[in-house]
Amino acid sequence: MEKILVMHGPNLNLLGEREPGYYGSDSFESVNREITEAAAALGMECEIFQSNCEGELIDKLHAARFDCKGVVLNAGAYTHYSYAIRDAIAAIKIPVVEVHMSNVHARDEFRHKSVIAPVCAGQIAGFGKYSYLLGVQALKNIIGEGAE
Ligand code: DQA
Image (cartoon, rainbow, N blue to C red; front, side):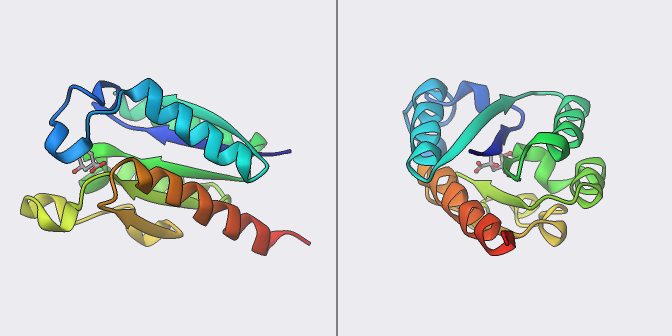
């Protein structure tokens, strides 16, 4: 079975209690359950990882290149300024789909810029928890295209 990594960056562990107007009221655990089920329905095994630390996210991206076909990444606020995460994505040769629950382009100006977008396969934003589910679907399509 193809394995993928779904990775959440800082503050996303607080889903359900954090700014529900932007991120919904579903808990982190229930969103992860839906992600895992969506991946399984597409025939993929899904590892979920969350960290509030930049270095841990980078280490996990590095490790993913050995056992995952691709990554769905919500890098949280790191999206907007972490050149280190951008370089990690560029360094690994598996596709990374950038996702955001909120429509970052309709929010504060600093959220309009994604420094990781140029090295990601594409960006999905604004669909709440469905951004992750769409990200999983997109990754499945990309992996399928790469298959022989
Ligand atoms: C986010 C958007 C970011 O700007 C913010 O810092 C987050 C979450 C989203 O999912 O909409 O932490 O990535």
